[in-house]
Amino acid sequence: MVGLILMSATASIYAQENSVTSQLAPEQAESTNYVEPLWEAGVLGTGVSQPAYPGAEERANLLLPLPYMIYRGKYLRIDRGTVGVRAIKTPRTELDVGFAASLGSRADNIEVRRGMDDLGILLEFGPRLKINLEDLSEGIQQSRIQFALRGVFDINDHLSYHGMAFEPAWVNEITIPESWATTISIGALLGNQQLVDTFYRVPPAEATTTRPAYNAQSGLISTRASILSSRMINRDLRFFGYLRFDSVAGAANHDSPLVQRDNGWSAAIGLMWTLARSERGAND
Image (cartoon, rainbow, N blue to C red; front, side, top):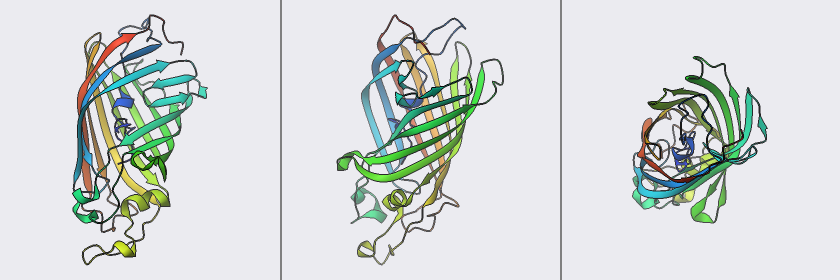
């Protein structure tokens, strides 16, 4: 659900900061003189697997190629989970607009949701504040805390509004020159009433003998930890892998009849192939 890949994270895939495609560093600097190009374009091939929603037993899976575009303007950004205007950029803080996405699932494919509404592909979009912490090892390792507040919209239902998601997280990035680039994230996902109703409310009209009526509560949806690793194969080709662990233990709606398990995992693996890039470098 919210925040993975295709992104997404994106997706989320995203789905996201937390989605996989939105978090990939297009090219890691091999020296302090390296300047990323102003724009890049290419093809992303990925396989994604995730729970239908936090606490679900059934999974959503996808395998497909996607075009991607990165633009690193001083204010206009399409890069690493940012899309739109970057309003503030200082050595310590950055305020931008982030996005993520999650895969949809038909209710008939989820045993406990049969007879209820389908879960569409959800797109998240909204502001994100990043606060950079002190570099830990002269640029090889960096960390930050970030706070994302995003509106959630159902792509399968004419972008109908499905509530707000708030995602605070600690993020640590480790880059080893000419080797792996790894991002580790630990955080939580919280939702308002409309969002938690989407996943956990059971209206009286849809209650059954095995699925009693349930009024969802706004608050914590899940806690999560993720790792994203990528490595350049050559100048134009990058391999990546993503894994995220979610837990609904202690969450506001852990007692919902639609919650089937406490823990779940999401994963993606794929290749990014850059087909074109600008000669002009980005002016950060």
